[in-house]
Image (tube, rainbow, N blue to C red; front, side, top):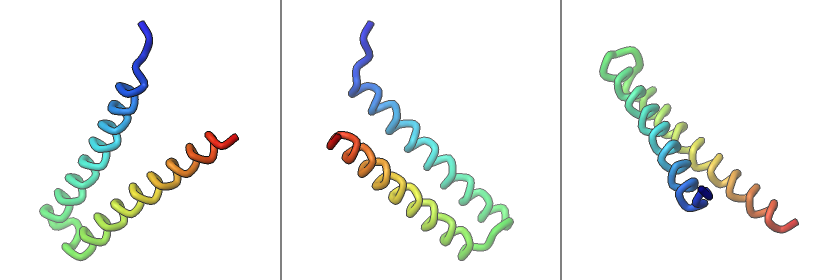
Length: 69
């Protein structure tokens, strides 16, 4: 049975969204448990969002350049 490329892309997007959600929940749990402060939690959340956006752009550019060859 051939694999559907659209289905593969949806699966990858779901895994990325799930990993992001798990990390956000972990940071919030650490803040509630008073392991980290509110300010540290906000900094970690902003950094996490920046990393996901940055690596997303990096991967998109890499795939675009690969198609140019």
